Image 1 (tube, rainbow, N blue to C red):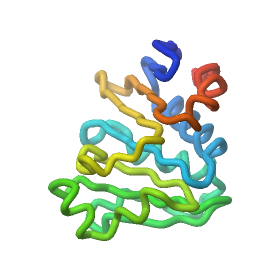
Image 2 (image 1 turned 180 degrees about the vertical axis):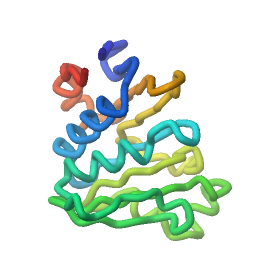
Image 3 (image 1 turned 120 degrees about the vertical axis):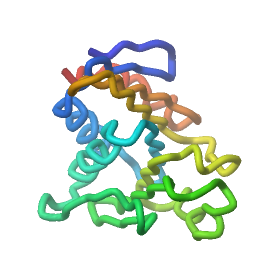
Image 4 (image 1 turned 90 degrees about the vertical axis):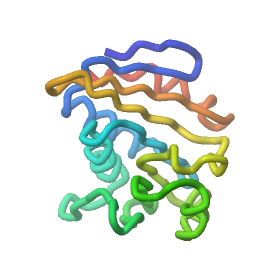
Length: 165
């Protein structure tokens, strides 16, 4: 069940893995070149599961296995637009993000999805969709979507109206 908490925030409560996948598919289908999705949540919360569904929504072939780039830091997948999937878990902060050469991927002609975005520090772009996943026990999750920047405000009404149950 989605609950619109404000003009730029929606909570999806009791999100099952299937609902998470439906959300990811929707987001992938609606993603535009230059979009940035920031995924926050504890280990095992479902960040990679959501990214796998986003990839399918972008048209990344089902035979392409989407994994978390924990050690590589960045994976690239070809769909209708390129998906750049980053995992910043092993980095200590914005200095290490810059040293790894990942700053260029914050403004691309594809979709950039970043796990552990808190490592960006002051590099956090203004326009972004923040996605927080809270594990509530068992298969239950709360997924909070927060839109930032003018482009997201214009697209927010459509996103907030979708029922992922």
